[in-house]
Image 1 (cartoon, rainbow, N blue to C red):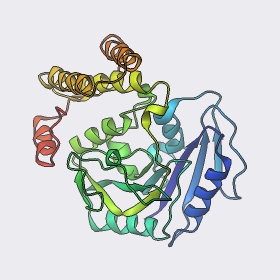
Image 2 (image 1 turned 120 degrees about the horizontal axis):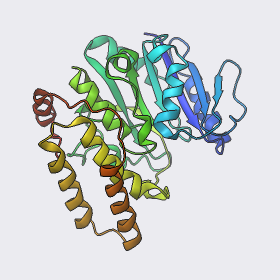
Image 3 (image 1 turned 180 degrees about the vertical axis):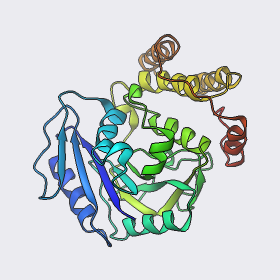
Length: 290
């Protein structure tokens, strides 16, 4: 299988970006063609052979990655699968790309592979980086219903059939939106503990827009993808969970602002999943109400 890689950057981590590019270049097997997208910022110096695209404005994570996809032809058709990697991570093992090829070749219905993210100093995988409800054992690989945005591989055929990442989201939950559409199209998603991306331990709330975007995009996710009876159920469950977690008052105000925005602003096209996909998600351990 021919692999490509899409990396978006704000241009503010040149050393980390170079380390990531070096780790991609060291992968076993055929060379991986790489595109680095400067998301509203100049791209730092990159090694020869790495293509770059500089955008005049920040399109957000999904928007930037969509531009990277199209750099490989319509829906990434010039390659069989695309790696999406955070610019401050790196691949510690040289066999990750080869494991991806083997996984896709062994299972024609496998559409997305999501890697295990581990802290480079401690080796610890944060619970939030295990994309399933039963996340206590990050070393257990399994079928899942979503994937990690900066550490994954996606067949280009999935993008051609299910569509690109939702550019409207800008940040947060864009992976789940694509995952639900891919599952509805008949593809499978697998979490692989043996495919590792090293990434410093961080808290998602470090982003100033975190609470607003998380709330808004939860609503948009439901409005775009769920059968009508499940939309209020899904959003209601997440409202209750947010209150139970007792965020700070400023965080709660931002969350409710985003929640309101999710109902009042356009969310893009609506394509509700089939009820058999709802059942499929449930059998995989994550019914689309949580």
